[in-house]
Length: 254
Image (cartoon, rainbow, N blue to C red; front, side):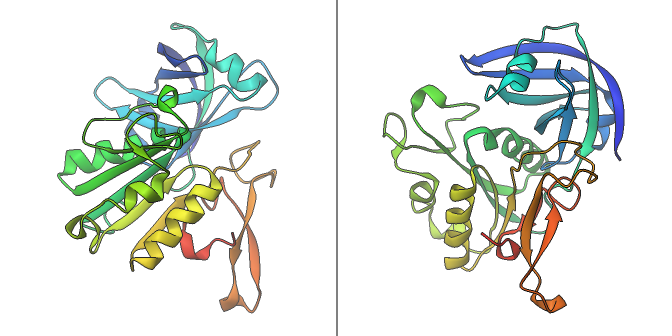
């Protein structure tokens, strides 16, 4: 289900100096969103900005997003206040298939913690076995990390000193065997996690974080390459917003 809605901002929480967590009222999006999908949200500038859905509350008719300030558009959205009305297009894209396995390893880097949090919530509600591995640059950037998660930081200021793959290497056999890996984060991190999963004989799905404009497959700004040997070609260009953002790791041309 994809539709444009006029939504009310219910709450804005400042997590870090450059990151806010926003709760938005929209019963339709709350009812229909699945982990891995995103919304396109209006700001004072021409184009909407895409954000992975971090959580939904169907009873309250709300959904959450995390916003890290990286430019004028995200800075504008981070300045929004409760009660403000915004234009939102969503839910968009394809999400993770949480029925594909009875065991998961969720891996998040940076702002990937937001969509991974949504997947964690749904799996926890269903009683599906899973572990969560999160990686940050340093302790000041840690967001939405529960004590039971495997935490890593690049500088060793919190958790395990290293990256997400360092954290994955600490998992025990019973957590790894037969699991499906779901990963969201920077491209180099997802490539490394996918290689780790392949090396352990696991299926891995990644959510590609490309620059987007329309969010509905028209503008072709967010294309990425996927393998196309079956079609007699080396690769095809696909739209992350429409054909993704979730793809099997082994299909992506890294």
